[in-house]
Image 1: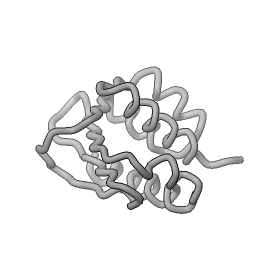
Image 2: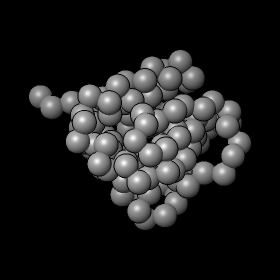
Image 3: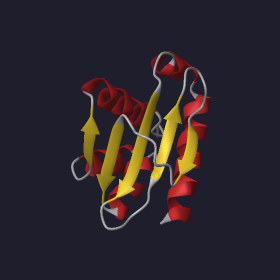
Image 4: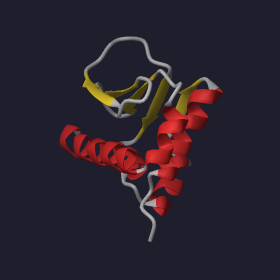
Length: 116
C-alpha cells in the first residue's frame, strides 16, 4: 500500500500546488491529517502549515487534528483525483476530527479533482 498511496499523495500535492486559489483555503490552516488503512497498521500524515504545500510524514506518531480511515481501495479512490471515485469513497471512508478540519479536507479533495 505504501507505494500506491505515496504516488497518489504526490499527485494530490501536485494538483494542490497547481491551483493557486487553494492557497487562500489553507493559508491559516495549521493541521495534521493522518490517513490510515483500516486493515493494517501504519499510515501517513499530511502536515499543512501556513502557505506551504503539505509535507508527508510516514510513521509519524505526533497528535493529529483529523484522522481518515478506510479500506485500502477506498483510500486510493479518495486520493485518485477523479470526482466519481471521490464521491464513492467518501461514503465508505470515516473522518474523525473537528468539523472545520473535515470541511477543509473535503474541499481540498473536491477542488483538486481533475476536470474533464
